[in-house]
Image (cartoon, rainbow, N blue to C red; front, side):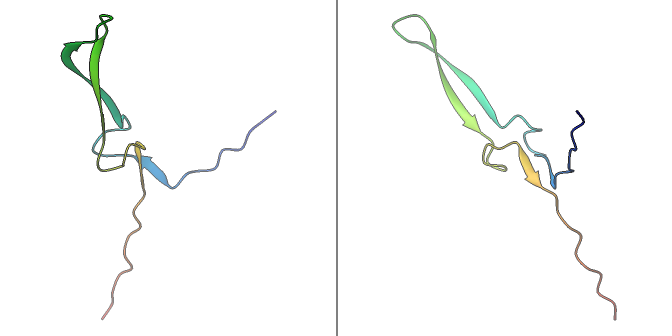
Amino acid sequence: MTHTITARRMRHCRDCDGFPVVAIDTGQRHPDGTRRTLRATCPACNGTGTTPLRTRPAEVRA
């Protein structure tokens, strides 16, 4: 069976390159020995990894 894929009007975020959430090691450990980490999300795409394509503004002719 063939599937039709429609083109999306989205692209990878320029700031995070499609990797919107990262885990940062704090250097501390939990009592069970696992590491403590912080999650940081990309502020440009709000953690989605995509941004909408911009449309060109219409040309103004005088």
